[in-house]
Length: 121
Image 1 (cartoon, rainbow, N blue to C red):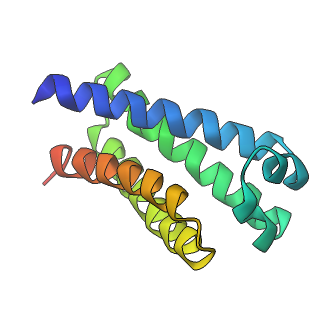
Image 2 (cartoon, one colour; image 1 turned 180 degrees about the vertical axis):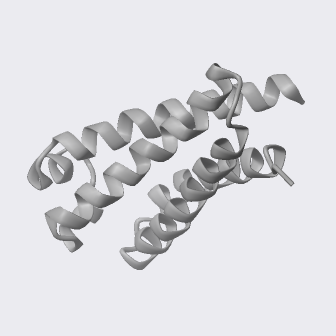
C-alpha cells in the first residue's frame, strides 16, 4: 500500500502544481483558449485564487513526504484538493461538461485515497 500511496501522492501533487501554476500565471483568456471553458463563468481574481489554492495544495501533498516531516500537511493538502475537485465537478456538471466532470472525479478519488492514507489521528 505504501508504493501505491507514493505513486498516487506524487501524481496528484505534480498534476496540481503544474495546472495550478499554469492557471496562476496565465490570463483568463489563455486559460479559456487552452480548454478551460469553465473560466468563462468566473472573474480573473477567482481564477487566480483557485489556481493558487491548487498550487499550494499540490505542494503540500508532495513536500512533507520529501522532507520526511510534517505529514499532517499532506492530509490538509489532499483534503483541499478534494474540496476543489468537488466544486469543479459541480461546475462541470452545471455546464454540461460531463467528460471534464468524469476526469475530475478520478482526481477526487485520488485525493480521497491520500486523505484516508495520511489521516494523522
